[in-house]
Length: 117
Image 1 (cartoon, rainbow, N blue to C red):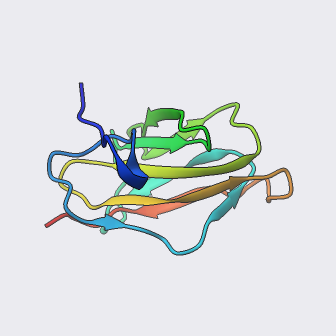
Image 2 (image 1 turned 180 degrees about the vertical axis):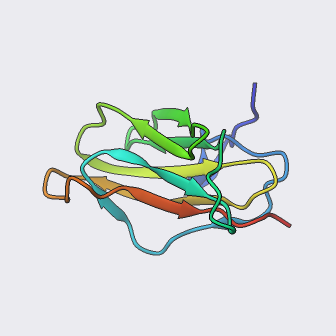
């Protein structure tokens, strides 16, 4: 069982044992659904990254990336979600996703996780 943040703006999200730096993209991502790919700085796909979203009621849903670095959370209703990507040894990435029917069908998250310190 992984440790979770108990308070603050990251409440409920998974906490990496080496979590010191959190990368926060400035603008929200607008997508039709919660899906994407996670890469390391060299462009290699990252297997096993914890991908979580939190809705406005505080409920957390999550998955992990596959060996191709891809992830998908199906059946996410329209709305605004906080997301967090976590992998031991890498900087976590936190931001906002707006799920909207107006978004381009082919749009997906593409995140590059930086090595931690």
